Image (tube, rainbow over all chains, first blue to last red; front, side, top):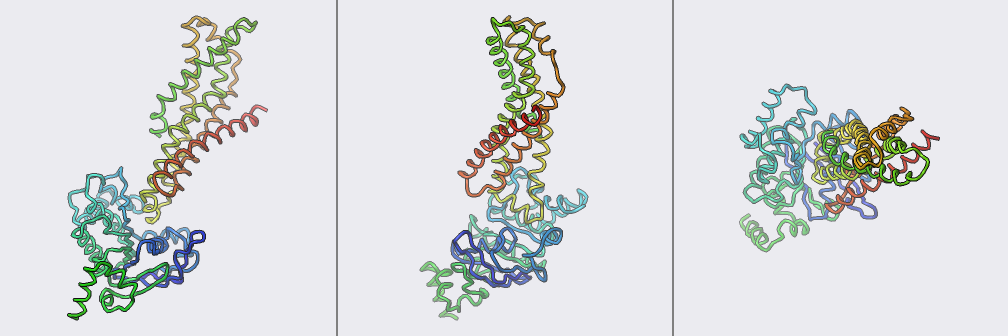
Length: 254
Length: 212
């Protein structure tokens, strides 16, 4: 479980986050959603420790993440996996070397043990025969899957995904979403996904944190989205006339 | 180290040979008609190359070639979130990304400076002996006269200090780059400009400290 308490963040005079309180539960796919510029990427970066909040506290289970330093911080880091928006794969390394990188850095495994673990992770993301390919030789969807394999190779307790569907076609997006959801359930991971993909919201949003203009505007599950009376949430999720008609139809059937 | 050392060998040799050649010809011109013996050309070229030209010119050139490349490489890693990815994994990114470059620079650049000094002296020979400005015996005699090993020590001190400046400044510029490709270009330029200024400043300070 990860908990954000009273998170404020300013860049100069501009206040981006204005007191966010949210809980991200273990074994669930937690989504941070919001319009561009709402502050969701900043929140994700604060949660993962890439940015320091101006004030507020981040709890990783019982550890106050904001106060951790040195060895204890590194210990927590080893429990964190992250899938970046652009995958952030190392261009000069092959798929296998990319996935193996955390094992090289933090384990004393033999080469064979590392290879077995890498193959296990690549198999999990349905990329059995891509070991020797370079990131430039595989598609965007495959790069995301390699990113997921690298993120889970050390069996993380916390998984962060920054816009996992950006730049992907709807079908591949669904594959990535399902993969993240399955991995979350299988390993009881606290998964936090930053997205503005409405398919993801409605398919895997077990705990949704909606941020608007730096404030926590709404918090609930995908099942509560349809019934919500929060106008900003409705305007954001059902932005197009087509989706509005769908919502109306769904509510009528309901 | 391969990029810094072997990759820069050709440009360093090319510059050094002309550096030595031009120095020799200009001193030959200035000494012509004077009472100073001609073999002094070899002596002056040797000391000038060892004390000043080899470490300073080589490092200024390397700041342009290697420094900008390092800033762009590390800046590119920052922009593609490679450094963020490593940080989240728990990797000490400054140690992992920058330290090997500093160690490589501290090892390879003094060697390049040493080669530059040798090639510079050879350049002076090529420019003056075949053109019969002075004879082979005179040049070699000059190059072997009044030799102070302390000058070589000074050359190595300068090269180590300059190497540290150019690598650390360039890595810093790349590591803390923010924004897009325009900012990356600016960081790359800043790496060269700041390295050059600091190298020249350090050159002055070292000269004061070691020669005063």
